[in-house]
Length: 533
Image (cartoon, rainbow, N blue to C red; front, side, top):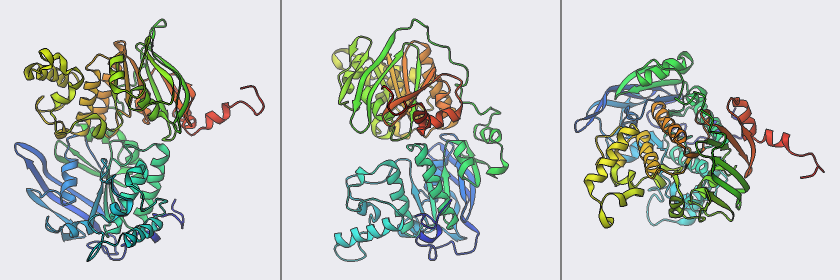
């Protein structure tokens, strides 16, 4: 519930009286009718329509490649439709070249942040609006930014580097920037993909406050529980076409999944079958001893056996991501050791981790997982490029043959191995990252939120491939905030304030995980005061 001091309550949202094309009376905030878009031989949208009521939170869902991104690019003025029209509050959308007109009507907070990390928070808030005329007054700009941040209740230094903000703060700065232009229609593209459970709840409270203030939200998510938690209406796209628009409360989840996939399926992700337990005498492949990283985790000792899939979860401050990055060489731990078999992995060395037999799916596929200007084949075969020709010379035919096998094995929807990886949908791009991690036949596979931002079918495919790797003898450590990801694990470790505080066997209840993540189990199981430690 929004309180009177809620920074996103109706009293504090700027531009409420003067936003163009909406007006005070409830009505249709934005409407697209008969929208079609083609890119060469590919039909991205075919006669798609959507109508969003002022002040509602409207979900847009569909599998990767369904047309969601193309529709958003048209609703935000980045693309011109081949046919059809977009209207805001009953008025035609401005011409594509009128960027100020579009900014006053609509803004998008993308899954991939548009915050420029090397600029200050103030510069990001007023990007291209630093001054109305004449030279920039940096003192006035910081003061304007400070006033805006105070209005939104954000305890952020306007003069500080935006790159120092955490994910939640970056999102709020982007929302504040959007509303400061007068926009009353905001598109949120996978806003929870990089947030933990507590931050997600805070975001949802803010979204409810915005909606109560008359701000219209288009919410894009692959997590159906979020659609039911925060949205009023849902529109489904499938294969570039509109399928349905229904009030969320009137649409059973099974029907929603069927609308997205075109198949009568249950609400499973393909990993609910009881995992076969690893052999009792399976050797320990991955071991950490007393691993510590200041302000992240301390004294973490764990072991993963060959063929075992171990899940790790916890809040954003639990240290789980930093632990995974330290094991895989992306971070350098302050103390402790990581071993693969009898081999000590050099700290803070990705090449050292690869040489020891560790494959990794990093948290952010855009920044750490892919080289966007290279092809699928080049990305997927990077760790094994020395296998495709003599003396380090790559024979493209050999590389492409190997990549084609990966495309088939991991169900990557792409025209071929030469396709640029940045042309893929999120789910298929993540499959390329997983294919590369498994290309070396690693003894250990470390995954960090591997299903973030992917659709239900891609999630099924990814988790199935992870289970197959474990069944083939790979020791798997999977860090995830998603309960569905964790259900297929042989056991789940919960981290709280930098330590592993609980281990859950298969069959755990959701409440057990939530309680442990919030620290309830940790506090209850703590030794009484004065007891021997």
